[in-house]
Image (cartoon, rainbow over all chains, first blue to last red; front, top):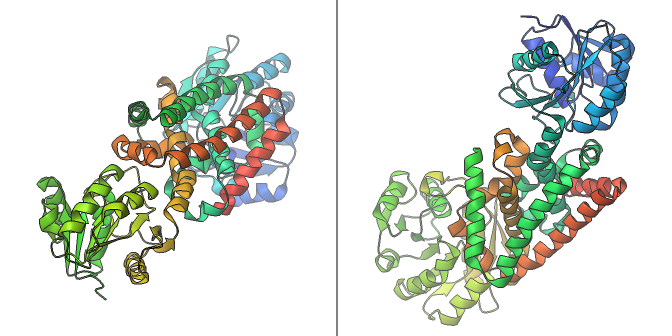
Length: 281
Length: 281
């Protein structure tokens, strides 16, 4: 069952730590090497059972890896993938867990040496929580992982990567980097921006009275701004396009309320409810 | 401990049913009479332990009530309160559970006979769920209930009502109907409109990939449009004012993204996160 003997995870936060825990728990790799900048965080990941070994040097950590997964903020992924590509064994497969794909895949493919292979991934299982302590072996169970091979990707590498994510319990979906970025702008990035704008626009004083609805609607905006800012900026065009669609809908809501067109308002609420009912829980 | 011997609950849905369950469970009333239009739903409420008696006639149901609580959609509350005021014993206290207060309180006070007393209430414990089956005896535990007495309200009635909600475990907050409506526009009504606009604006196809963030952000929009449309239309001015504040913030987010002002974007995300951290979970 061990598809990869040695897996190196660069960045042992929520996603990297969860991948590690699942690999360790399911005995899917002989060695799971956690790579990071700070020994304390790596030691925590090891104590929590997310990795079996640790390394603060990327070169050392990936030297014997069959699979390298870069689970760091999107604005660091290209550099770390290219460093890993220089240091890993020939033939190793490299992927990432970044929330945007087009910029990353294009930049990596421009510079990656032939000795290594990169195929982008995005596990859609984020959370406002961060760090190895939030990691869970079942984080990817029944969640979608998008993989974004290009025309240049060998069929064998697509299937190796797909099998890897499947072995963690995920549902693997394959699409182009551009298509991925458009979809996540709609189901993740714009909701995040809207939640953040709502949280920022709510006056501080009445917040003590806020019930479940306000907390639900704004929850994702508790995500780390240092992780999210580069997500938006590496998916600018798609986010602006999806945001325009939201603003148009919101304007029609406001106009219905302003003009006393209660039927139009009721229709929009009914449309929203249908969309939610169709989307499941 | 029985502050009111006979409590009549008009409308045995989520809120009315939960109040009834709490009264029955805590033995806070000798009789809890559920009043509604359909015998099937009333029988369900009785079977679930939310009421001890049922009545399909408002006049009959409130005839011996010391306290009447109208827990029906906001566009029906004024009529039902005035009907109850004609039929209940002299000196009875009437309240409601409507999500808006200024229009309701003003309309009731214009027409209510002296023999009865009305003080508005709003338990901030809604949910996208509806109906007696969703009712829970602890729904109001540690939740805020706003009561909105006016200058004409007797101190004794304020304290009777306040003690009633406290006996159900709620934290009672007293404020004017206008102040209430402004606050709920910020913490509830605008978040609901934004969630609905987001749900309606998201294309159907990628929804199968939506992760927890999208579902959290849109959840409240699953609420019944027939309940929510009159909430917005009876709080139009305050909602439009709060909505304008949200739109202004969203515009500044969009402009930061458009112009590549990543620092401004990061600052806004950080401001949102601070607001959320201050608001607690």
